[in-house]
Length: 278
Image (tube, rainbow, N blue to C red; front, side, top):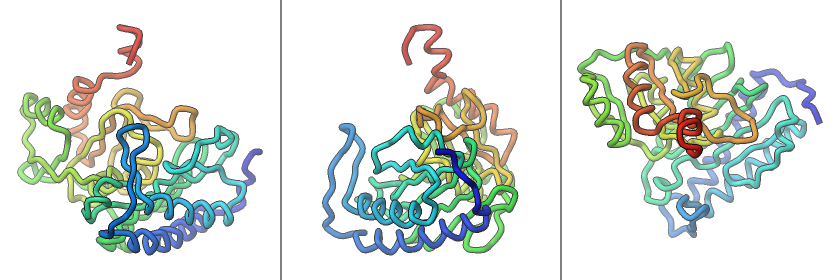
């Protein structure tokens, strides 16, 4: 069923903000308690908090926009979403491992995606009381203060990355400092939009729900965000995984970041052509 879009972007932002606040209250009720946890896909941690927040968001958002599609980390996927022009993309708790360990930068990441690109987004860090918001063409903000991502002086460049990427960047001669590798990818990304990080990266395999909300916040703040193999990320396609990703407000960092990420993680297209497998 195609989506009959009757809601404006500002209406969707209000809905996402309200849902994020209530979801945060639910999540905080589990935070730093003896909560039940398990693993999925052999490696990814899940907690009862993830499921509770997902249940609330599913009801609150889908009831408000029954014609929108749905994609959530904690909900079984249905490719019916691809027939919808607008879709919610949700990570109930981004940074679950940190949440379980009592680390405070976990987020609730929400986005409305239209025709493959985010048009409304909220990334909310309840413990830190930081709400990042963006609308297509409306700019980005944190707690109501407009975000304007700017390049940092070289001596103040903070770039969090996996060790292998740091090695490649060091070999390139790039002048920077290692930044904090927050467990929540969405939180790391919006720190670039806020000007606290010069850049950050993600290894190949990040999913739509990990990055869709932060993507819009970054771009509306004036930062660059790209898949280093395929360019602008496209959402709500059959395969929700992305290649290695780079975010920065400093154009001079894009080339070394691309080179480092391609060296460490490769590009699926190149690997498929060369060896027949990723």
